[in-house]
Length: 167
Figure 1 (cartoon, helix red, strand yellow):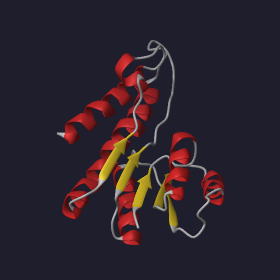
Figure 2 (cartoon, rainbow, N blue to C red; figure 1 turned 30 degrees about the vertical axis):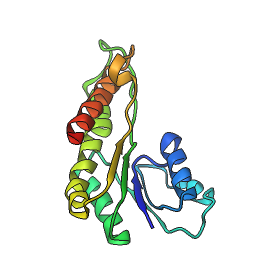
Figure 3 (cartoon, rainbow, N blue to C red; figure 1 turned 90 degrees about the horizontal axis):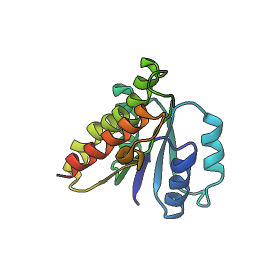
């Protein structure tokens, strides 16, 4: 039985990935930051209701919270086959109007959250002698986009981090 962790699983791309991995018989560790109702609704919609899934409310941008997420997965399932770093936010604004807080929040969630989860799982996957890490980014990380200096920088950082980890 394979196990996957999905950050930012409550909606959008994360929810679609969760539904598909449920169909493929994965045990799932589903992370969310704010809406328990969305997580319960997601699990209600799963086709495989027999599969064991856990939901973990935490903010992956916080180093210790990300560790709790990874620990919960290993404590429940013993091993993790796939980590999908999907958690992400936008706080769009033109650079002259963007606040430091808007910049920091996006970088912290999108880039630092990805780092935190990779950091906490990497050694364990090496010990397992297997595992996959999928970091969700965006073409905006390559091309940029008006009003998205923070988002573009965070996704470019994820691309660079992913290439470095792969080497």
